[in-house]
Length: 219
Image (cartoon, rainbow, N blue to C red):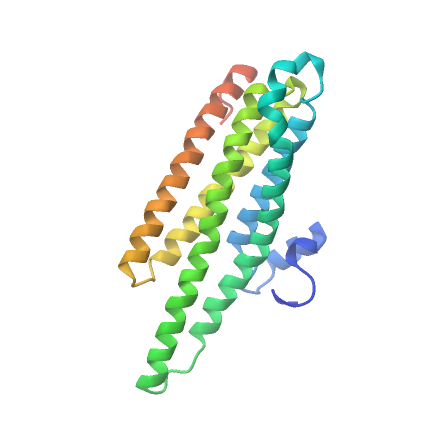
């Protein structure tokens, strides 16, 4: 079952998704895995926020964390869509690479198609990365303000988001390396760096909070 056929990747069982990921098929791959990691991180943010808001002991945190319950739900839903979109984008590039190139006309058509598909394949992990930066900001908040009994879950959100950010960045950069449109490359490189820096900043803050809780930086 290829991406775009009946049944979305994110609607598969966990076991089925892992089997698809491990198969010799070209997609899904790392980009889809990154989006899924980020969706899991967002779900954990929602969990910790939900375990905090409404509990009298954490009343001072309610105002900061209450919006995260709904926001994290929306982000997780979008990230699940990006699981599918990343796989479809990769298959688009693969399809363009298979176009005929027997003459100059076919070669030019193929070249243009590859460039167009590479741009699409760049923008998907870019959105994943930018969304992860938002998830990481929320994960930082629940690390510092969330229910202390669920801080390890908040820490899990931080680490999953970190992995997703790094993988998405890899995919943005590898696709940009094949694009000849310098203006597009410059713009995307700038946006990728900005999103990655935002995610890193929140990660450092969250790590400080977790180190204080656990007595040291575990990793």
